[in-house]
Length: 451
Ligand code: NAD
Image 1 (cartoon, helix red, strand yellow):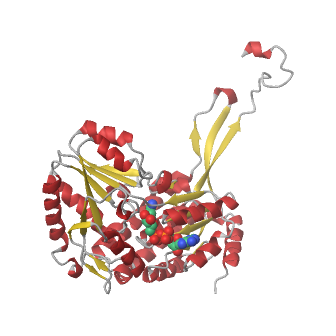
Image 2 (cartoon, protein in one colour; image 1 turned 120 degrees about the horizontal axis):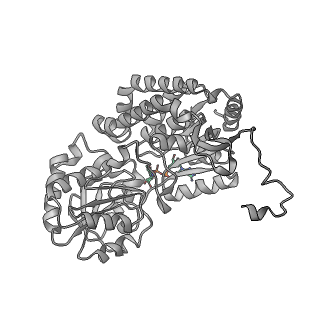
C-alpha cells in the first residue's frame, strides 16, 4: 500500500535538496521518459484499444504523437526557457539590471481524466518536470489498462521522490487533495473542478483547471458544404465524441440546413460505414454510466440519423438530433458522446440567444467565408480557444495557449505556456552600487518640487 503522506514527504525532501533545479538533470529525465514511451508504443496502442476500442491511428494522432512532440519541444528549449530572462529596467532604479527567474513551485499534484488518458496525464507531467517540480499523478480509474501502463512507464523512468503515478478513484483523489501541494493541475468535469478548487483554497495552492462545457459550432450560409461537413464530423466523432473540445452542437443558417444535414450524413457514412458498430475506427462509450446518460439524452428528441445503441458493446452510433429545445437536457449539459444536435438561425440574434444563455465554452468553431461575420463573432463571444473553418486543430499548435475561461476552466498550458504554468515568475532587480542619488531618502523637505 502506498502511503500518500510518506510519498509527499519524500518528494518534499527531494525538492529541498535542490537537485531538480539542475537543467541538465531535467533534460536527462525527459529524454529517459521519451525513450521509455517509444519503447512502449505498441503497448500504448494496445491499452487504449482495450480501454475503449480506440484505434491505433487515433491514439497516434491524438495522444502518442502529441506527447512525443511536447517532449521534443521541452528537451530542445529547456535551457533557453529556464534561463533568467532579462527585461527592460526602469529609470527609477538606475543603475540596475532586471530579470525574471523561473522558479519551480515544488511539489505538484496532477489529476487526469479518462478521455485522452495518456495525453492528458503526460502532457502536464512533462512540463511540470521540465520546470523542475516533483509530480504525483493520479490517472483515471476508468481507463485501467492505460493507467496501469502509465504507472509502469513512470516508475521505470523516475525515482518515486521525483514522480509517481498513484492509481485510484475518488477516494484516492480525495486523500491526495487533503495534502498541501505547491501546485495542482486538474483536468476533468466542472463539478469535480469545483471540489478541486475548494481543496486548493484551503492551503492557498495555485491551480490550473482544465474543464469542459458546451462548445458551439456556427455554420453560415456561405460555406462549402462537403468540406464543412467533413471537418465537423471528424471533430465531433473522433474519440467517440468524448473530447472536451468537440463541437457540442451546431447552429447552421436556416437556408442551408436541410442540404447540410444530407451532406453531413453522407460524410459520416464515408468515415464509419453504414454499421458504425463494426467499424474498427469508432471508439466505444467509456462505461455503462455514460452510456445510460447519453441514451437518456436522446429520449423525446427527434433523431434524424444514427441513434443505434448497443449496451453490451457500449456503442452509440454517430447520431444527429434535429432542433432540440433550448430547455432540453441535451442543450443544457455537456454531451461528451457521439450525439450532435443541429439548431438553425435566421439572424445573428438567434445565435446570441443560444450561446449567451450558456456558460463560457472551452472551444468555439465558426465556418464561414465572410471575414466580417467571423471577426464580429470572434469578438462577441468569450471562449477558451477556437478555430475558423475547422474543428479541434488549435489543440495541436504548441505556440497557442490551451485553456478555458469562466466555467470551462482557468489557466493554460501546451508548449512554453505549460512550462510557465509550472514556474513561479520571480522578479529580481540587481542594483548597481556606483551611483546612489539622495532624492528618495528622508528628509523629504522641498523634494517634491524636484520631481
Ligand atoms: P471527472 O471530473 O469525473 O474526473 C476527472 C478526475 O477527477 C479523475 O481522475 C477522477 O478520478 C477524479 N475525481 C472524480 N471525482 C472526484 C472527486 N469527488 N474528488 C476528487 N477527484 C475526483 O472527469 P472525467 O469524466 O474523467 O472527464 C470528463 C470531463 O473532463 C468532461 O467534462 C470534459 O470536458 C473534461 N475534460 C476537459 C479537458 C480540458 O482540457 N479542458 C480535457 C479532457 C476532459
